[in-house]
Image 1: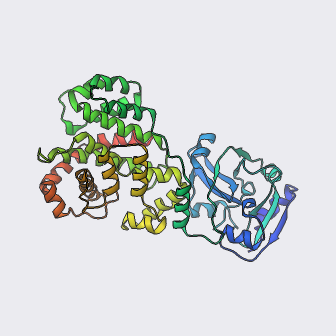
Image 2: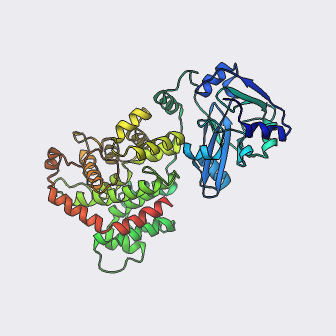
Length: 450
């Protein structure tokens, strides 16, 4: 396939200084660089992004990884990676697998990473058999492009022939030395929980510093399944009259840690679906805990937190590996019947369970939470704090009956139910209670996803 006519005419109209390099047909950038005898770090990648305000193409070195959060912060946008069909509509006449870095030829604004220097010679794929070479300065000039500061970060070096996503993401994980820091408010709550002398007044003083947290807590305390007779109008009422100190502190902690992430909102793994499932799972896990016999009953507050945080690996995946998250999100949408752990293992070679456990360990979360995050898909787990993992598993399978979440089955394992001293009738009553409060819980979820 030769250089598209639209690009050729654009370069001519702009009086651009460029050279066309012909090479054998290839399938990847690494193969193209090798076939054209070009250093890979001088090749450019391009990614098509879009939101309700239109499309933008981000251009960066092929050896770098795009940072979508950095782009959205700088442009004050809500851009997401566009699917292939949208790309085909934006770039008529181009190879469908390519996003041309010369996007201005199609009337689309371009953002060029500042790691592409003005005097650097850069090479851009314009077809499966042709590259265009020009300087970074010329690339910006002919497109009147924006310059993005740090919109892509250097990725780990990979062998030129390596296209295995398992190898790629595993290598990138090994390169990461910093995980998202726990938000300051969450750190304060953890410190408070560690203080044996803290009480509801201390918690109230902390929560009142954050109006968003305060509103969430009041709204949760006013949920129908608490059946509080009266209006909940203050943090003090929510903590002292309805929830109690333990329950309230865990609710606030769960909401606060969720503020670390700003993933794409759409899709089965997007923020809207994620928080809708997590909030309902937290409420369901909490009520299931209260249904257990007193001698084995876990702390309802910790049960709530386990239900809230058990799938945080999805948030970390979207935060650290945005293209892979987008890819997985689309595959889950196309194959909703596929077990999520198998899908992740096949596509990425890493699961949300592994990533979530890693994050919880980094944040020094309680052992009960670690067990729930690590083992919530495992009905045979019998380690320390297994009851929290088992309650989350039951909650997930109940929610799956309503079309929510990623549970692998609708069946409640008989041995696990017997160990918990729960009957099918009991859990169905608890599920009905949460379903009756769905409007209030979904309102909380919408606020978390906003």
